[in-house]
Image (tube, rainbow, N blue to C red):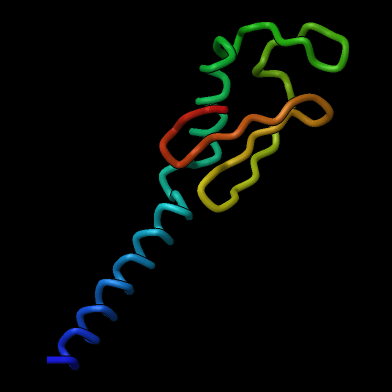
Length: 91
């Protein structure tokens, strides 16, 4: 009976670790999707944004994408950072 509990615990732990790993990796958040979510939150690609002292359309602003556990980061160099969570919320 004790051996059965240990095997069950190992299986449940393995499944839990794999599930957390997949959520942490968040393969459904791609670079393009993160950019689109941030632009949508800010008003669309043609929306004017005050970038480095000038009003510029969002589509013309240089963007950088960084993938981290549970989040993706989109930042405009020298200006702002937006965080996209694994459930597509932009902070």
